[in-house]
Amino acid sequence: MADQGQPVNVILEFSPIQTDEELKSNSRMVLGYLSARYESDADLTVTIYFKRDDDMDWENTDPIILSAQEGRYFGKLPLSLSVIDYYVTVESSPVENFWISSLKVLMKTLPAGKFG
Image (tube, rainbow, N blue to C red):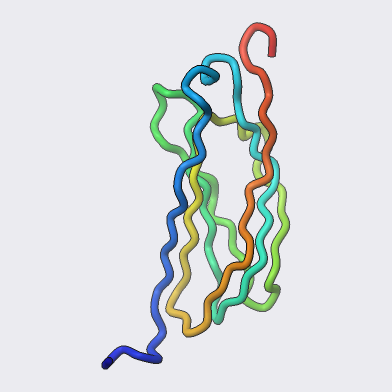
C-alpha cells in the first residue's frame, strides 16, 4: 500500500439529531455545551449545523477549535441556540494519529410557543 503511514485529512459528519415530528410545533432543543475527549496530531475543528424551524435553511456555529495539545474540551455554545434539528462535523488537517473517545453536545428540551 503506497499510502500506508501517510497523514490523512479527517472529515467526520455525524447523523442529525431531530425533534420528533409531532413535537416540532411546541418543543425545542436548547444546545448548551460541547464536551470532547480526543487525541490528535493536529488541531480539530468542530462545527454544529442546525435548523431553528422547518422552513429555514441549515445554519452553523462558528468553528470551534479543539487544541491537539489539550486532549479534552468543554465549552459553552452561543446563547439561545434553540433548534429543532442539528448535526456535528469534525475536521482536521492531515494527521497520523487520531482518536475521539467522546464528543457530546449537552442540551435540554424545552416547550416552545404560547405556553413555553
